[in-house]
Amino acid sequence: MITLSTFKHGLITLLVVMFFINTAKAKCKKWPVDYPVKLVSVEIDSVYDQLFQANESGWLGADAATSIVLDDKRTLWLFGDTFLGEIIDGKRVPNRFYINSTIAIQDRTAHPLESIKYYWRNEGGKDIAFIPFHEGTSGKYYWPTHGIRINDKLIIFCMSLNKDWSENWVAGTVSVVIDNPDDDPMDWNLNYFDMNIGNDHFIPQSALWYEKPYLYFISMDDLNDNTKKRRMILVRAKASDILSGGGAETLEYWIKSDEKSFWSKTHDGAITLFAPGCTETVIQYDEQWKLYYCTTYNPEEPEIYLTVATQLTGPWSGPVCIYKNPEHKKMTYTAKCHPELSTKPGELIISYVTAPIGVDIENQGMDVYRPRFIRVQLTQ
Image 1 (cartoon, rainbow, N blue to C red):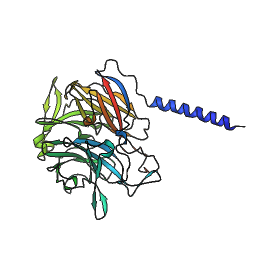
Image 2: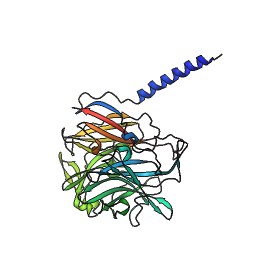
Image 3: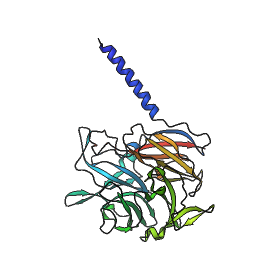
Image 4: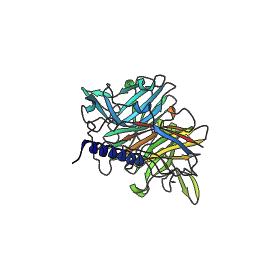
């Protein structure tokens, strides 16, 4: 006979075993001794991890979470597919399938948990994406993945997508130039430009870096269109050309030929910066240590990797695991640094998203399909 005390003992033993299994799963391999920086700590950020909880505004969760500093007080956050609805009995209950983009403006002078205001559009009584599709551009809808403010203009880069999720899902890249970013977001002038580049095997705007006069792109590239050889390469264009609506014709690629590295108008011979490549990441520069940081990941695996370099052209260090998502289900993705949140050298505030299984977020807890945040501390 199984007594109550036996059952309790067995249950406690099982929970302890599960705890240690989950803890083990959440750990990365040993940090390389010869790496340019050393890992001091990594932990869930107790404040920023609450930043994008489902709330009474109707915003229930989204992915992407790119942050763009607009000025000395405001940060723009970009989100992709977003669920809107209500919180009922502690569950997120969407009022429809989802919309393809929302944004938030953060007031950095306020406490983080009181600093966010969300925006999306409404058309004919129906919620629609903040960046609605513009006829004449590629695809059928957009995911805003990156952006930057340069002087008095804000540019947002979007993946344009087809409705069919099979081959050729990514239709291209569309830039949206906003010439009045200091106004209320609902009054922004959205000027659309099709860049005539981008597909399932090449995403130009995975990460951005501006160093006058150039806008640099770390770009996801499948070598020979092989997804198993997904890598990152370096591309650049004059920022003035991109802000004027330029596209593929303005780009230059960092390549190697005849043992020489140089900028070229052709993609052939593009240098691999690091692998695996990913669709969305962020470059962060540590002014005191003179280092560039970049995150990367394979969305089908739970690991988030860090790579570093002293210059954008490389060499970049081999990616090393800094965090292993213990709640990984189907995908762990959009791992991005947020430089404006860091307060000291070697500190990285990184967001990521755990994808739900399917689109039913109602019964999968409150933490899937929303940006989570970790705080990483490095030393030299």
